[in-house]
Image: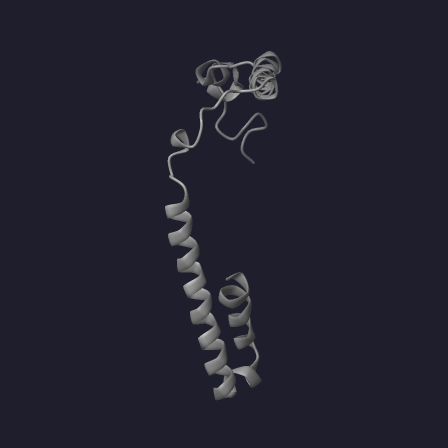
Length: 115
């Protein structure tokens, strides 16, 4: 299916292949066979097993699954707490009030004045 539907059409990048009518016909037939294989995989795969994972089997997590889940939570909260510790939340209004440009007496051209 992959060979016929993905690889064979790449031959059309070559001018000699595009100009040979017999080769174009053979490639077209093989692509149609590949499309039939694709439909076969879709139909047989859909009838073989239900799409609902809950109907396949009952899931019981192992100690590896629980450990992986706990580890991801631990890694997330560790990174979050490190972020809050080293980059705390600061309100924009506090930063703007502390800047010299926020003062009404500050000259508009900067500290040097406008030259």
